[in-house]
Length: 619
Image (cartoon, rainbow, N blue to C red; front, side, top):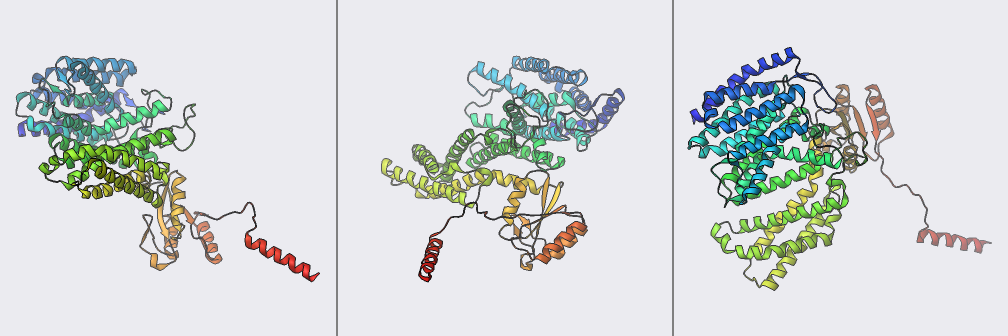
């Protein structure tokens, strides 16, 4: 263990901490810096050649620890990939030229029998292997768009792959594959120390292409195909471990395609940029993606080693569904400012969430996955013992189509697919609950009546209904939950304080959040002393009028919004004077009905008739 992993990692890390600053100095002397551009995130010149520092340490240690001699094809191909990236950093190659180089190097690995071994067909598996290598190589190149992001993701991905490969590192070749990753991790870790925000050096294409190519190769089997019978663990493991690069690349490519842009052009439309656009700091955006990559890595290792554990499979499925919803949320954030014939003007870009029919199709497909997952989970929870589950598996397989059909029809009938996710509320939850109840009840009646499964466990349906209600409710509320969570993470922007924590408070919060922009809600002020310290819509009531005075004097508030429906004139006047003195914007939300057409009610008509009769009698 020490010789295989720890020693190469420590040596590479120590060397990188020394070599990377030297490469930064050389880059600055030669004027090789990344200069600010409209389609790039950084706003100051930053030295390149971070990838050169990683490569010097990596290939030097690979030679010293015998990796280069034992894995010559992989090492040479990685060196050529690094060279192509370095040329691109210096003279800027065309995207097509880089693609040709990537395909050629991927074909080289394939020639030496590095392949995925996911498919029985050798031809199809070869094509899939080429696409996998080229795709992941470009994926790491694309996520190198914010300080510390690519290097941090690489450390997490590399560590997960290392843990996954360690159990089989007894063989000579496998031991050197593990050592290859350990050296690469050490070199990347030394670079990351100088690449954290604010970064003093970038890795450039030379570093990102080397990392992406190496991690893609680490997921391939060279001459020792994996167990084809366990397809789920073979495919799901690497996909989960490398989910964030795949996630970001898919999101960016789809967004640019829908918006009429080339996938190869640069832009500030990556997942990290979208997180910053909704108010997160750069550090928090990067940290969030690190956390998601870590979750994916842990689940990938779990699926790869414990694929028979149904809880691991369900956790991985839930995470993947959550990431799909997260992608839909990020896709709705406006990141393109220029007018385009194919771009819908407004707050949201025209991804699935804003096309009504495509969104409904996505909802149906999502619910289909949730129904299957929840029904399977209910069965496994009811029959925890594997033998009991297998005894009842025939009932599960025969009843699953009934469950799916009854549930989807019930959801359609009660109106689940007529809601708007961004405005999901309690009444929508009742609609979902009604759909779950009618779907489960109908399916149970059909199963008992048609299949005569009188020995069928009714408890399964109770568990299924609870799980499905929670899953569908969370999926529908996800846009609102994620939006409000992101809003609470903001530590910059216009600070808004809401005066009045009454019935209109929730409406004010929704109106402020719907307005978009760089706005952060500080909390509530309310004159009722009993409300001090409580939370309304997730925001704390900070105190009464005296607390407001303290906040204004401390310059902790930029704007005050009055949500109280009624406010004494003297209090309103004092608020106006106080806000004026401290240069704080004051506004008020007024909600009411404005009559446009007067209609006589029956009572008014009767009263007018009575008056006419009295006038006639009097006359």
